[in-house]
Amino acid sequence: MKNLFVAALLALGLASACAARPASRGACLTECTPRIGIVSAFGQEAAILVAQTRSARTWVLNGNRFTTGVLRGNPVVIVLSGVSMVNSAMVTQLMVDHFKVQRLLMSGIAGGVNPAHHVGDVVVPDRWAMPLEVYWSRDGALPAPCGAAADVSCLGLKLASADGRPLPPFSLATPAGPLPTGLFMRENFVMTAATAPAGEFRFDYPVDAEMLAVARTLRPALARCGPKAVASPGAEPDPAQCVKSPPQLIVGGRGVSGGAFLANAQYRAYLFEQLQAQAFEMETAALAHVAHANAIPYIAFRSLSDLAGAEAFDADAVTLFSSGLAETNEAAVTLAFLEGWRRRH
Image (cartoon, rainbow, N blue to C red; front, side, top):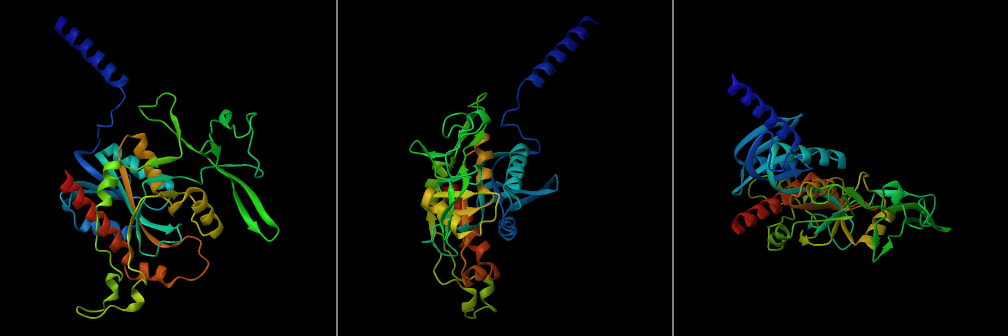
């Protein structure tokens, strides 16, 4: 009887200790093979990757379909996030909680910001930011809700800055001159195990240096004509299903994400001028935030669909999607990276 009582006390103590101990990132709720997590925002590309995954198995979590298996020699788990920052963050954290994700890879389509790039190019930025996380002031003067100019700390916020000075707010060009919108970029608060309990503010989320080094070695064969450009085997491609410039892989620079679909040429020019941004889309920086919070290295590949906010009709933008070129080239870069990563390790 005494032994049973002692055993019960020990069990109670162990249960209390386990309840008090925070779960480590090494824990996984569903499947615990170390894997590269691949999050795709574009369904057709995810389908290409899943089709080439060996020993594929599907897991459905809260309605989201995760596919585990081996892709180009790497254990992976693949999921489609759906469009938007919220979906990207939610699905990425779901993946991190349920699978043993050691590295993250995001791929999909983006609007171009750098006017030197072309439709079909694939960009691999070295960092990502969220410029639409803003302090919306009434005018272009530095806000001072906490007393001093640019001080928003009493609100739990921090303005984004460069060289120690807040970044200029966005202004609209009008016939009467610049019209201030009062939109000041902010940094994001993020909590990590390393920075708890104070947390930290960040504007940029750098991609993993080792993954970026592998990306710089890639020489994928990027097509100018999509798979639907050839009507029958051996036939010549339909020129209408080919982009004008041979697509290139471009590594480096800043990528930006936000909750708005960007169709404003002035704001695109502002992002290029102030941030030297290369591409704009609606998912990667949210994944980067989750990756940083969980101390997981990440990288992202984005195929450019158009010049965001361009007013002139661009036949190449239509061709990119109608010919299947968008998902084909994006998948080609992802697969080339996985091959390079396998060789490196």
